[in-house]
Image 1: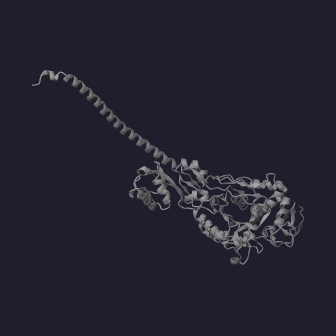
Image 2 (image 1 turned 90 degrees about the horizontal axis):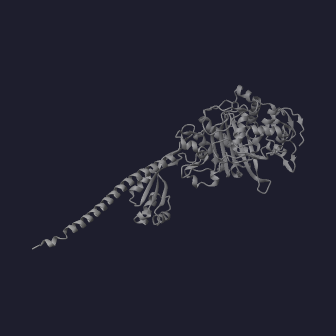
Image 3 (image 1 turned 90 degrees about the vertical axis):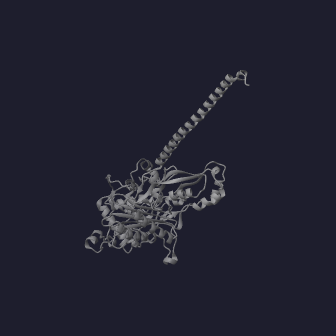
Length: 562
C-alpha cells in the first residue's frame, strides 16, 4: 500500500518541472525568433543584393555609338560573369575538362588549378554570353556561380577601332570617344552618332591595307573629309585591332596615327606655301624663280628630286614639286606672314576632337628663318594627318576653314575665312594640273570622271643619329574631288614602303608611286556611295573652270638671295 508519505515531495518536483518547462519554452521561442529573424534578414539581404546588382548593371549601361547612317558601332548587351567556389566543386579535374570543352579558349591547366584552389572565389570567365551561361548550367558542374552584368560589344570588329576606343572592366571609357565622351555616354541612353560612314571606312581601310602589304610598308593612314563642314567620314590607322579584344592589342596596333601621330609631311605643304604666297599678294603665279642651282641654309643643302634645267614660274614650281622654288617663295613671304597663316590654319596647335589621342604639333615656337624655309616644303614642322587634311580642305573650300569633327552636330558653326576666293580658285587649277599635266607628280591619282586635284608628298625620315635615312620615305597624297566644286578630301599616308623592283620594274617609293594610286582607288569606290557621278571632263564649262596657261608661259627671272 502506498502511504501519503510517498507523495510528500510531489509539489517540489512539480516546481522543478515547471522551471524546466519554462526554460525549454524560452529556448524554443528563442530558436523560433532566430529562425524568423534569419528569414527576414535573408530576404532583406537578397533584396539588397538584387538592388546592388541592378545598380551595378545600370552603371555599366552606356549609350549606343552609331555611324552617320545609324549602324551600331558600340552597344551594351547582357552577359554573365562566371566564378567558382572550389570547396563546392565535386571532382575538380573532371569538372575542369567539362568547362574547358565549353570554353576552349581558356587554358586547361589554369582551369584545373582554379578548381583545385583552396580559395573560396576563383574567376573562370569575366564575360560569358547567355548561351554559354546556359551550357554551363546544364553541364552538371557544381560550385559554379554567376553574376549578371552588362558588357560592351563592338559589332564591326576592327572598323574605326581607333575612333571608338574601348571600356574597362568597370564600364568606363579608356580610349577613343569612349573616354573622350565618357560622361555623355554613361549619363544618357540617347545614341551618339558619329560622322563616320562605315561603308567608306571599310573601303579606305581595305585599300590602304592592300598597298601597305604590296609595298611591305610599316604602317599607314587614310582619311576622308567633307571639306565643306569638316565631317570626318573615315579615319583609318593601320595596323589596327578588333575593338572587342582591345586588351590583346599591341602598342603599335593601338597607336592612332591619324590624330596622334606627328609627321613632317613633305611636299604636300607646298600647296599651303603657294596659297600663302598668292593670298598675301607678295607673289604672283607668273613670277619666275631660278631653281637650276641648289640652295644652302647654313650647312643644310636644299635640292630637288627632279632637277629643273631653266627658271620656272610659281605654277611650274608646284607642278614640278620644286623644293628650291618653294624655299625662294617662302623667303619673299617672310617669317611673320607665314607664321600668321599657319596659326590661322591651326597647324600650330592640337586639333579639337572628342578623343584623348590627339597630339601637339612639333616645331620651333620662335619660328626662325630655318623653320620658315623648310616648312615651305614640309620639313621643320611635324603635324598629324588630320591637321594637314583640314588645312588643305580650307584652301579648296573657297578659303573657309572648318574645324574637323567626329560627332554629328546640325548646329551651324562660324566659319573662318582665311584665303580669298580668287586664291582658292587658282590653287584648285594648280592642284588639277598636278594630276593631269605631263610633268605632274600625281598622275596616278587621276580617277577618270571625278576631276581629282591634289599634291604628292615624299618626306625622307630622320635618322636617330642625325641626318636622313636613305631609301626610307614617308609617302603621301592629298586629293580633293571634284576639284571644280570641291566636296571631299582623301588623304593617304604610307610609311616606309620598300622598293618593289620585281613587281614594278623600278625602285621608286615616292608619294606619286605609292600613295597616289590608293587615293584613285578609294575615290573610284566611295564616289558612288557619296552619290557623286562621273563628269565629262571635256565639257567646255569644266575645261574653262580649270584652264591654266601658265605652265607654258614665257618666263621672267626673279633672283631671291638666301
